Image (cartoon, rainbow, N blue to C red; front, side, top):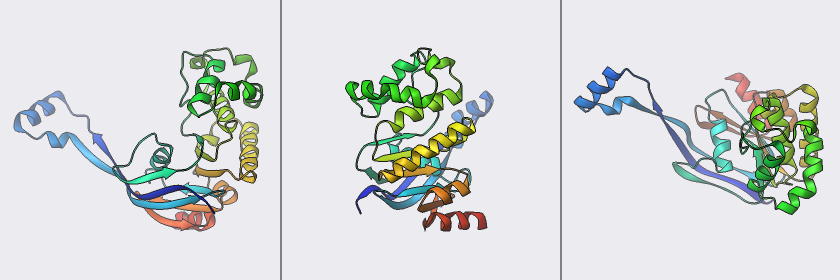
Length: 242
């Protein structure tokens, strides 16, 4: 099997800036105690794993475990403080609703913008445009500025664009929790098609039954550390035991 994602000894920290009164800030500034204004939180602590071509990986863990941070590192939205993250092939995904969309542009314009960001040529976007709009089911709003879209409409259009880029790697962060049930089923059907075509998937979700059903592998993160890298059922069972 071909390795498509490698996460190697990754560390990621964030600075947490606490809100204090102006008096507190002035006193700390005058006394040289500025370090009390910032705390550091280690979201990921020396995490390593790989993803093979055709794997469907479920990233699971409680809130604050580092799942979404890991997905953003894989996608390149953020970079690690230590270690490295690399991937091979075309990557697309849904990290958060509306990401890569400009609010003042119409849905039509954003299809071309988002498609270009995801690596499609203008000719490829034009060829897929009708299928993208049909999948999204928002034809009558396609020439409306997306700042007037609901979160569900954002999801429909973003998912439609992403799956029509024919990615080698597809990332999904809890995005299927948004939207109505028929569209969720439609998204899952498309994900199954992508799996059959050999697309590698990395999915973050709190729906453990979905992870166990959809993924062949599971990675369990807990307080930023990797606890399980095994089958999806092993990761789900261990999380439920915590």
